[in-house]
Image (tube, rainbow, N blue to C red):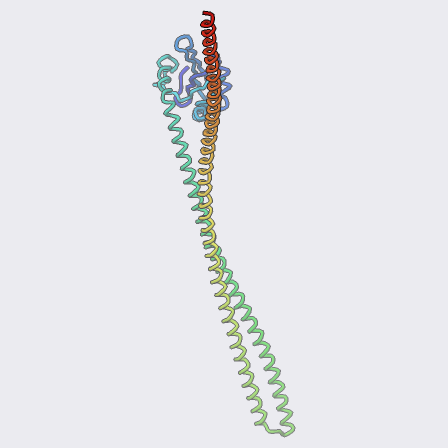
Amino acid sequence: MTVDDERSIYIGGIPYDASEKSIRRVVDVYGAVDAVKIVNDRGTRGKCYAFVTFTNPRSVIDAIKCMDGKTIDGRVVRVNGVRTRGGRTNFGRDSFLQNFESGREWGRGRVRDRDRDKERDYDRDRRQYHDRSSRERDRSQDYDLQRERDHDFERAKGSFLDRDRVQDRDLVDNDREDWEKDRDFNFYRKRDIDRANGHDTFVEIDAFLKLNGSTEADRHSKEFVSDINDDQLEEQLYRSSQRLEELNKEILQLEDNLEENEKSVLYLQQKSKKLEDALINVKKTSSYNKTQLTKLHKCFLLVQDYTERLKSSEKQLQSLVDEVKTGGLCAGITANGNA
């Protein structure tokens, strides 16, 4: 069997009773297996390891990442890649020594794994920051788009209002023309009747001129009033657009304040976590000190008990000594009396 650098892995520390079937059952979850080679060196060096060749090189990465440091039948295995030269077999004792030496780097590899984890955490935080920045840019673009829509709406509204005003003026002008035609018809008819009756024509013409003059004055006053209404409407629209811009600015400012508050909350949560950890450590220390104090108190009670017992023993000893002295004195007196 020839080992392929890109498709093979080394599994060290497997159980001594491991078989090709059991090894296949463990590694099948990471991809299709082409070959399995088990080297059982228990009699000489007490080692048992295996080489596995996958069909897909991607399976090698997944197997090393997931199996390294795991247990198989109660034994912790070490999994790493395989290096060969010119496609020669990699199952001799030299290859075993090479893999054994490479296994010495396992501890350093774990440190490198932790460094990679830190780099992944940093990359994740950086991506979150960029996502937040992109959301802010999208929000700004939405605001600009909304402003353009508002301006388009105002322009469309202004054009509709202008068209309605023009239509209203046309209607008024048409009504005025119809009224003037009716008035002229009635005037000329009245003049003809007055001529027939012999009235003065100049009085009628003067009345006609006065009537036309008053009509022109009324028309100019109405146009002036309509111009005033248009100016007021435009001013109100301008004020409304300014108010809308102010409200949009206030919304952006509130969103910025909200983001700052979220950052503050996150910072406070981190501080709270640190304080909780410190409190847990203080509780552990306090519990340990309390246990030591309880033990010290028990020792003090034992010393006090032993002290009282020692005093009692001293009293008993003193009484025995006194009894011995009294007995010896009486025996001496009795001996002297007999003598």
